[in-house]
Length: 452
Length: 92
Image 1 (cartoon, rainbow over the protein chains, first blue to last red):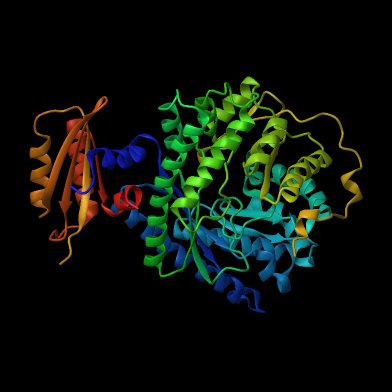
Image 2: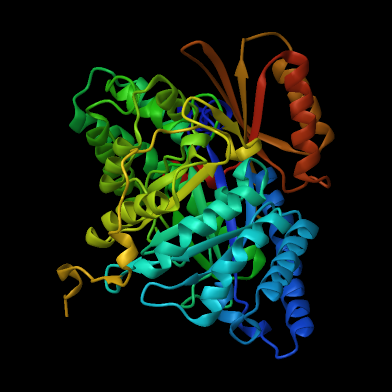
């Protein structure tokens, strides 16, 4: 036999016992060729472009699940940032109408989320982008599957604080307009947003992408936790090596599925995103990995170092396995989607400040965390700006998905159900953020952007 | 015609009838067994079968369902996967 029992068992066991899966296959669809001056003709083009390809994506992904015995958990669609294709139709009611078309196309194809309802505003806003932000609360109220984003900065453009200042009010309106404020879970504020990220809610099909591209996210926090638990006595250099080897294997599996799926769909293969993405399933938790390192309760001193070491090993293992690593490829710490993180917040070992620190060493951002509904808009803006400044200055992606839940206070919890999980309400610094951000303008690009 | 090779992994407590039941199913699907190995790994009894599906007139989906049914009857985990995934994960 060409493979030993140990090798076959290792692969089968990762899937059967440690939740290894293809977390998402996301088909990017260019909508620029759907543009028409007649709005109904335009939305008709959009519907067919999405539904027809999404149906094929779901069918082909299912075939590969059977062939390789590996679950492909999510099949999703990312489209061109819609503000770009709505320039000539920029009105709130038309944005809402377009969102409903996207929602219907996704539902009809059996796709749970469709991303790209957003704009790139790092340097300034077009009128279409401003109207889009105004329309978002109603978009999230009227749709179930549509996800939105805004890229408000890059390390070469700096950060657009006029756009950031619109987010607090927009998120509060969205929170009030949707049950349990769940609309806010479908919106991500970015800096340095990757154009090929397959993960929701922030996926979109970038302007530099071809007509179609297939991106894939593979994830195995449970597998990594398992190998860490099996290596309790080695030093951290050796532990890093063990993680690298494991991630190498996982990533190779992801590359295989991604390439084959793209080939079967006759679209170009884009990237493998090696982000460690937790779920609320038992053991599928980043907090559990950190605790298996020996740190103690997640969020205590030592956690930042542990996340740094973990993600460095993941990146090195992944980079050796595939020439197509892309997307976010960091650690996701979405509080509500990680059982260990939920516990860490409840017991008080993880604070919002520590979570922000973790984002400086590889975690992607402040993700899926709930705050009291009465947190002022200015404070929400300041939380977003603080986090995104880390991304701009450090030349990395940073993102915020904050959920201010009306009527809830610290100690309460909100259950979003399903994949989005349960979020304990986190404490926010009660002191005001003052008039600082209200000054608006643009945070200049850092000196490190002057590389030419 | 090129072979279509897949690995069947059976995990659980060793007991009589495992090979018989699976072999019978494979025969009915016109699937050839190329190799069988087994090993005790920690708390698990693990058996792997390399099978060739090229002559089978029935889809993999049905074979997978049949194996899962046997797994439930015997109280064991049974997985079937195309060999490409092992090539990618364990060979450079």
